[in-house]
Length: 186
Image (cartoon, rainbow, N blue to C red; front, side, top):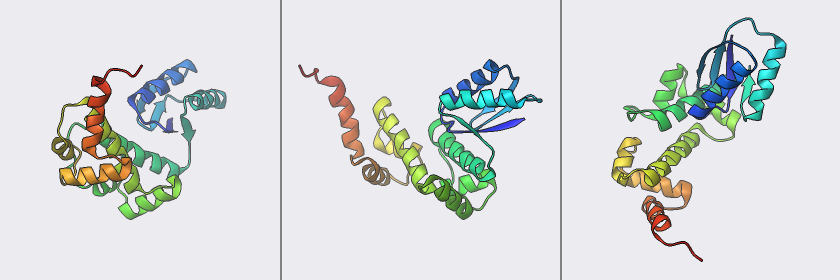
């Protein structure tokens, strides 16, 4: 039996789902971002126990086909932005449409209706979160980060970063140095 799970955004969520499945004494066959496969048969009581346990962790089992598709979109974006080892060789809209075998306009409209934000904005928000992480924890230049994150240029990255965060990427990177080199205020 395949279960579709909403709000899985990190590798830690996979561990939580697997642990909760085993805790309610179900046989876990596979857990991936946004879905889990458990051995049949499953009693409605155990399924309800699992549903309740996952809700405590902010995760939700759902059955609606359109909601499942939106979760698949979100999982593709998160996996590509945060966990892929190579930058995309195509634009993100084409990548998502190809992965799901749907027209991008349909996916974009469905996503906006379901999430209250455009798919483009969701992609940008995730990319900027990853850029912030790279600026804080990696010793990379803005140009290197722009290349890694599939921006057309460092200027494009900088403009988008400022629009989303209110800071320039250079200033954000300097904040790290200020934060870790100045003595604490007494």
